Image 1: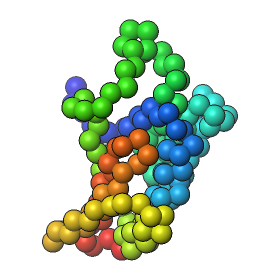
Image 2: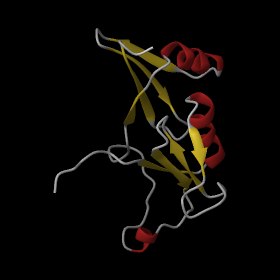
Image 3: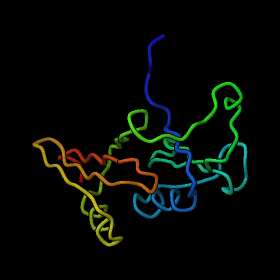
Image 4: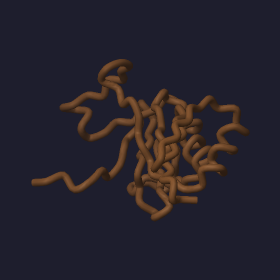
Length: 135
C-alpha cells in the first residue's frame, strides 16, 4: 500500500473565525462548510484553486468520532506541526497582501524557488512556495 499523496491537513482551533479569515483573507483561498454540514459554525474546509479541500479547520471543542479511542490533546512543542507547504502563484500579490495586513513574514530566494513563510493564528507556519517560472 503506497502513500499516493497528502489529502488535507486538519487544524483544531480555539479561534475558528480568525483561522478561517487567515485562509480566506491572507491567502485568498475558498472556504466552505464541511461535507456533513451547511454552516461553518463548528468548522470549515479550505479549498485550493483546483477546488480540492486541502485544509480542514474545526473548533478545538469539536468532538470527532476518533476522540473516544484517540482523545485530542492540544500540545505545543515537538509533537506539533511545524509547517505546511503550499505551491502558489501570485508572489507579488500575496506578499503585498501580507504586508498590508501587518503580518510578520520571512522570505527565502533560491534559483528555482521563492518562498514566503507566514504564521497563521494557531502558530502553524505556512511555507508558500513560488516556482521561479510561475507568475
